[in-house]
Amino acid sequence: MSEWLAGPGFRVYPDKVNISDRVVDRHVDAGRGDNVAVLWDGGSWTYAELQAEIERVTAGYAAIGLCAGDKLVVRSRNIPEAIAAVLAGFRYGAVPVWANTLLKEEEVAYIVDNSEARFAITMSELAGPLRNLKADGKLDQIVILDGAAEGEGEHAYANLRAGGGAKVIADTEAMDPAFMLYSSGTTGRPKGILHAHRWIITVGDPSLVQTEYTEDDRILTPGEFSFMGTFAHAFLFPLYRGASIALFSQRATPEAAFAAVNEFQATILMSVPTLYRAALADASLRERFDISRLRYTLSTGEFLGGTVYEQWLAAYGMPIYEVYGVSELEVFVGNGPAFDVKPGSIGKGLLGIKIALLDDSLNEVPDGEEGVMMIHRSDPGLFLGYYRDPERWVLQHRGEWYDTGDVMRRDEDGYYWFLGRNDDLFKSRGYLLSPQEIENALLRHPAVAEVAVIGIPDEIMGNLVAAYVVPTADAETGDALAEEIMETARSLIAPYKVPKTVTFRDALPKNPVGKIVRRTLKDEVRAASLSK
Image 1 (cartoon, helix red, strand yellow):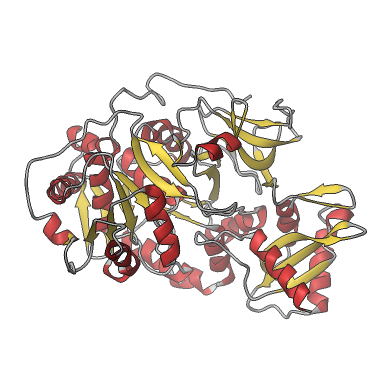
Image 2: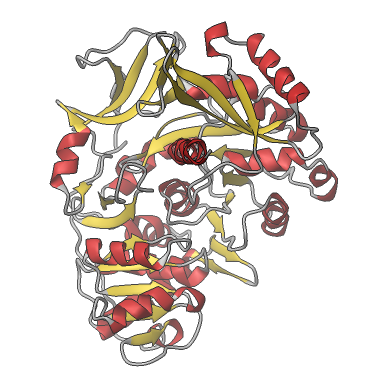
């Protein structure tokens, strides 16, 4: 079992904790108020300026009737006003609830209803669904971050922060609810994942050991803060360390991301594998942009694979550190500067977090054998629960363990190798197969930009191994290329793992964070076969 290490003060939290205090006020009190906290196109805040902005917004919250414990839906791109509004929510004792900007009105309505929120924060262009909900009596107040208010119950951020008033600092307990994010809903309706204020210490401490952020770092992500990985690693954890965050609110293309790295002189870029693969496919980026100031890049959201790591290192001379986690805790396995990367591995367990690979009887499996990744329910980094869904909490636990559903193995050096989710694995000819292992082999072919492997039901084989490939821009698709790709697989993996078919596609189905959704692909393939 992973050793649960804790030095003096490490992951130790007092009775009273407030995230805003830990990520902003603490630095000002320690004399670091003049350090830059937030940068954006056209401006910046030092820690002292950010603290003052938070105080103004907090006073504004009091003026519009927000109460400690109230849920506060946040639907915004990564703009400075959203940063201050969320941190002010923490300071006030309210509970920010992220809602992704790509969600449709029905999905936004579900989050508002399920979270029991009466207040919302949004941008003008994203306000439509929230205004409709307010008109239906499902919201009381809306704050418009970047424009004018329209009608009763709306407030412009500029006016909210200008009202003045007494300072408000909530006396929050470490276990008080702090924020909530909603899962992508791959197993049904999205679930509200509720975290406590202690999380900034209990997960922030080991994450900063892993990433080795410094006060001189500038962290940039094209990803929205409505996703746990970016919210933690590119918003709260950098501020917790006293580093700077650079805000990116454009469409997440490699060109735009590289331009932002140059503009803000970022030292760490965090994104999803899709962006790194797209960047590698466009050799002109290396000539047009100098990103050498980056110390390293972080990858999250889906499996990176060893090929992308090796290609990126060769092209740009810096590593991609792949990290793994779940929204119910955040990252707890990952790569980082402290040890060498094994291409294809998701790294080592983060210091102090109590995890284990277990079999069906909840016994730890030996190194080299497959097991399901689980987190001990006593670990203080785990979430408080699924909001208004205690039954799901029970179903997600097995004995004293939180079951992630992810199948892995650990090698003799302590590196973890991701094999897939329980619901992604399938049997073919009696063998239990991992899509990720097969995909990693197929990605070795230079014409494969992206790939997803699924099992197609077959009366004889159980499932046929089928690969769906997005080719690189210059590839000539056809039977010859398909055979080449399968031959690459034959040279790397056992014969029973090699795909029987390779189908070329323009794109693969993905969720808003850019993760390939195999279940949707299976549904598309099934629907296409039924229509024939």
